[in-house]
Length: 438
Image 1: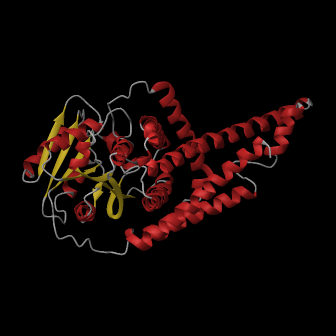
Image 2: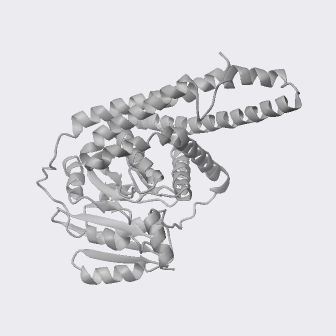
Image 3: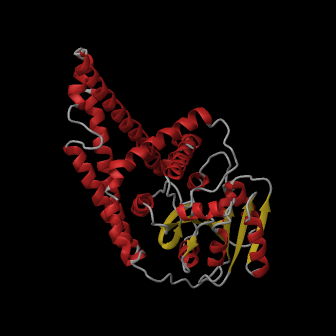
């Protein structure tokens, strides 16, 4: 078997194998752990909800007011305004005047980054447990109860990640992400939880045991994805990480290619930074359950690079073949051998039979995630399944390119991680609203 055939098998078999694993794991998790419809909590420890934000004038008031009447008796809300230059400060000052009994505000100057904003909230928090959410996140009224079930009943649980659902569903990109969030967050986290270790909590919504976070040294600013980093720090201190799909929140996702690209590059870069930071876990056999997660992420990056290399080579051969036909100059034998062995009939957009199998497996995987998550959605949820057909066609290429760019940023540009941050793309309606105010 030639090296080209081995590469081809890897590109084909890796996503096929992982699709099967994720479907089986998601089904097992659903059958074993999602039967309860009520939290059944008897003890209600004090909770602190921390909302970090920067330039959030379009969304912050709605988010804060949504936290006013949660179905939980003991909690406070701390909003950390991290050096905003828009009207966020004025909005928060007005809100705290009207809701001083349960709301506190911290203003930081200058912009110091999300990790430091979270740490500031933690250091002044009164709660034994903490819920951190993004500034565009609208939580379900029972979210604190579902999070507390794990933290109260299991003393070694250090964090619980929730179930973010997409609420802006107007563009094709947003509709694709409705299915993607059920898949990459819902199905994969269910499987990782069954296998024992989780790659990352969802930065948009996660609950933490305060003592566990303090033991780990709080959030670090040396990576661009503080959620992945704190997950690994907690697990290396032998704290358990849970996934709770009934802790639901509604978020805004990018609806422009630029916004989506920036988000995925940041995710990829942060993942590589965490892999490097925790590369010494191999030295301690007590961390052996983290090794499969580490290897799986490395293989995912390798697959992205291999897949895009194949696409690039295919395009090169197509151009070369066209030029040679036009000039009537034959392709040199070694190059022709590679082309005929591997690329004849191969097309990343319209591939051969194995591409059809991959596409079918991808659709089965999405169907599984939709069936599992249907209970957490409205009746219109099923129609978004028809938009995921675009996922294996174009989304894989975008995701692979973003992974490559993330590795490039880490390798050549990430000598020092900047601590400053800015709000992500919150969707087309916020962009239109922002343009009207300028």
